[in-house]
Image (spheres, rainbow, N blue to C red):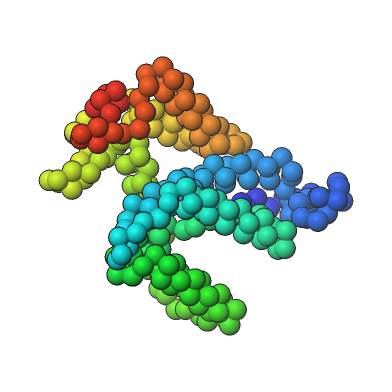
Length: 253
């Protein structure tokens, strides 16, 4: 996370304790409370990858018909994110979080796995990572990045954002897959479902809290929506989407 610049008196204040001194929290114009809230918000907004990554990779078989275990992928995704985030924080002393990125997982699952075995596909991912490290260490990565037109950089950012937003729309039932058209609004053309209503209310709550500049507004909205979802599930037993048409009738679709 990033924090707004503080005044000169704040940036020159003495560290409050060893933790503050090591991570230079006060010197950066931040506070321990701000960093904790930022960390929680970052975790909640990134945690979806622990579920989404296994869904993408375990749902595809390789050229030999083998598939990856959902639980194993989930554990590996969570473990790698935790280890890299902790190491980066302890070594660089900067508040950045790392996790598996969207894009390469879909490419590996839908374009690579059908041509090779899963071990071979994972080896290609390792090679890809080593090449990126080499490019970063030699400065070539920055040269390539600077050579890309700003319009293309913006387009890539927007494309990734739309991809993540589309995943949220699908998971909320706001849009579903169909035959003609391939994507339709809501469940069987209707957005009048309990999950969709909860999604809209949570999104509106977060938007209002952010507009009012409430500290931790995103976190409050996400936690509130999660608690509401748990209560609704306990009352109506909506459950996941299932059945002959892939939709739970209890969801209101």
